[in-house]
Image: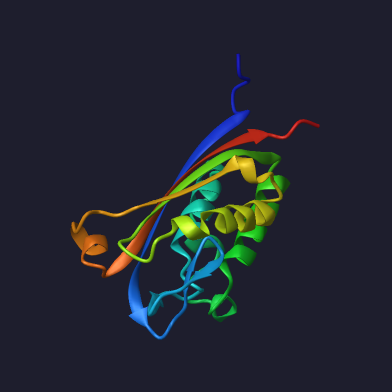
Length: 165
């Protein structure tokens, strides 16, 4: 039997529109692309969804509360560096990441060639083994804003467990 409150699940989602003149950063990796995602930070939808899942599992609201998009301190910020801060918050609240599974939805470019590097960078930022981090991609087969190549979306689910003393 699991002790009440010793495990928590978090679900995260994020979406950003494509824009010209910005690099495309996903999972902390810059992918070859003729356009990137619009946002106050580097607009890494994958890492944003993951952070939101962790923050949600901690019952700390959402990442907009921690990193407001009207705060100049976060303009152009590296989402991987922000993930390190979320990891520190997680540990300060007495939790550790058991597992994370993430999916990014976009038509192009292909994510598969970059998946292992994304997993490595995310794991490093969280201070966990790479085996705890799942990253995959999908298209929407032409449906919706993702299918029209107007933007990208990402989803993440995490399992946190209260750290043992």
